[in-house]
Picture 1 (cartoon, rainbow, N blue to C red):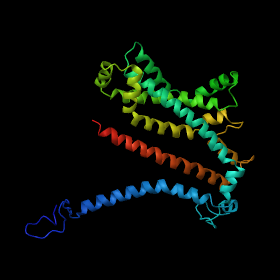
Picture 2: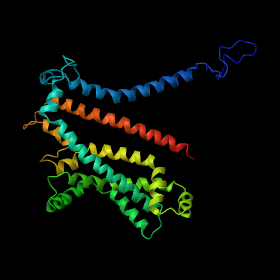
Picture 3: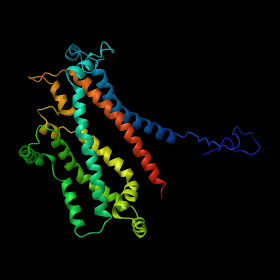
Picture 4: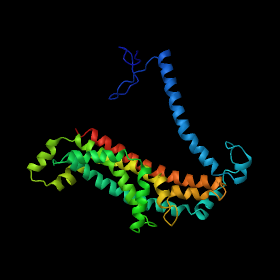
Amino acid sequence: MTTTASAPGRPTSAKPGRPLRIRRRMTPRRAGSIALKTLVIGFLLAITVLPLIWLLLGSLKTQSEWLNSPSWALPENFLNFENYQVAWVDGDIGRYILNSALATFPSLALIVVLGVAAGFALEVLIWKGRGGVLLLFLAGIMVPGQMILLPLFSAYFQTHLTGTIWPLILTYTATGLPLTVFMMATYFRAVPREIFEAAAIDGASIYRSFLSIGFPMVRNAVFTVALVQFFFIWNDLLIALTFTSVGDFQTIQVGLLNFTGQFGQVQYGPTFAAICINVVGILVLYLFLNQRVMRGLTAGSVKG
């Protein structure tokens, strides 16, 4: 390792108050390491970005181009946005997005509120039987979703809930709670008990300890859990297809199946355009939530 500005008696270009920049000699081993890292990053970037580019280019092709040209061929007209008009107007993709939002955000609110409260009660509070209750939530993670669909459909039919948005909200909340409770209980375990004991000595009630102390300290985990559960609910097809195969509450994933004709004929251009609309919305929301999670993790790391 050599330095270019630390030689005694030689003028230096570094300004006062600025740290000296140390220039390392490029050895073959270091050059190979940099080349390998660049290759790996380029590969990961390619497998992530190329499908999105192929999806965008596919949404600009006509049905004739899809049937008569290779799938990797470029569109003849890069300004052909007719497929987006067909997807939005004829395909009614806006209504499917609205239905997904109506099913996702209430479910997400219930999962976060109930999951955080249950994690606090199971980990911070001391009461008889809390270990068994936590095991029941853990057992819920291992239950396959396919096993609960038929009993739930029968229960919703008998209670006259079929044909509404409530079967989706209730099912998503029930299937999302076990993992949320487990993660929140684990995160509450890392919070020092002396904080809650000091709050109790100062006269804080259980609800005050949860709302004013416990919840703010686990907000990092709340954003993380909310992000994970959002993608699970928004991209779900099995539950949505079971309870909204007919009716006015089909979600975006079920609505994409309507672009397939009676005999399996697929309108590729409008289908790709509808997927692009869905992906862009998710990416925007992901970037927003991802920044919130990163800021929360950074704030939590310096809290001590």
